[in-house]
Length: 528
Picture 1 (cartoon, rainbow, N blue to C red):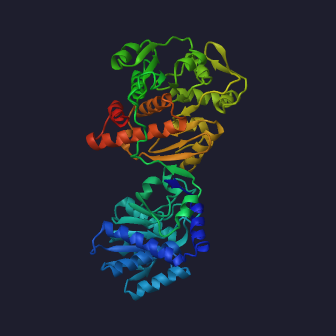
Picture 2: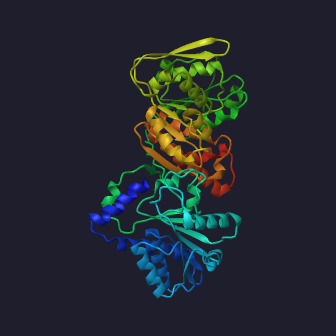
Picture 3: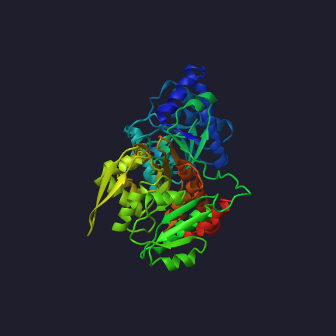
């Protein structure tokens, strides 16, 4: 499903009225009916329901829902207006509600706070997607009262947001004042503010309804991102004639004396997601444990000598480097060879740290490779105890690069902080991927996957059990295994992330808290 900006959705609304002649009042009626249907699903007719109504169309939607509830026989309904002055269409709705006998009060009246605190269901129709900054005046007072009341446990109502939680807007940061919703009933298409890392949990469950927009307008609406379906695994069936060499070969550079488990997890994940042959290059100290843990993985002791890009490209269909790898000088030299490979290369963990150093100290060399340009650039990297180590990016187009950073690693790569400016993260991921002509998989409770040509996919994680040591190593192995089978990098990243998250969800539902190694059998089942 496409995700659109609030401006795009406003344009759809405008075109529906101007080009198709659909009256705004009709769209409001159907939006309000959709909100009332949500109310019905969550409470009985005896529930105490409060409808918060702002002065605009969102307030009109909320009052339409209140009217529908009254007509359906709900006996304990009240409306709290943010202010007395409303737009024309909202004024009409409130007059109808008054004539139906629904109690209407204005914020500031003593009864308003009492009504809110006693509500079983609260329908939030204060602000819509049209706001471009923080709420002010009476709206701010109400949003602050509800937000604080929910945090303190005083406001116990189940909160249903009309189109968007009040206070939320497209560029609002982590400090933005928002009424947290348990359910957001949004009109037409999901909106970009919902999927900012700090906002998603404030939306609760997101239900998308069409209040009467022509399907053609929704189809032609420009997407800002694409929401990946979390339960759809799109792997083609294996051919009965497939064998190990036809299912792709992957090389994994991982593991060190301090973190041997990362190598085992990454290599095993690549193998269990159908890659035919996986070769693990690891340190001598890790070798015995890796062989014992992964008898089906070809395990090789890695010396300080680098393996050339030509050899890697001739021997493997994809390369993964970084899980538990270490930051030594040998790995710095090896990274330069990865950047010259003609096959897809997945950089994770320590390899990302080394790559971020290369971007900062020699941006021309790293950028020349990552853009896939046919150029020749000399690269020199300072290595402790060995002076300068040289590498080249020579005259042929290089293989695809896939980066899998967690928030801290992405900050090292881009300078954009999830903690300080979370509202910038999705766009920063997209821009970085486009600028450096690579695929980026940003790993957090929300996953953002960007392609070199500007596509951005969003995958909802929202599974705290996935926050376990080694989970990222497993994901990197999944993506490398799929890339080794010939899947294009962006598709491999999206598919690997969906399988990884689905495995975590199903495992959590079956067994509760789990460890990263337990993900791998679940991944194998999904890859059948």
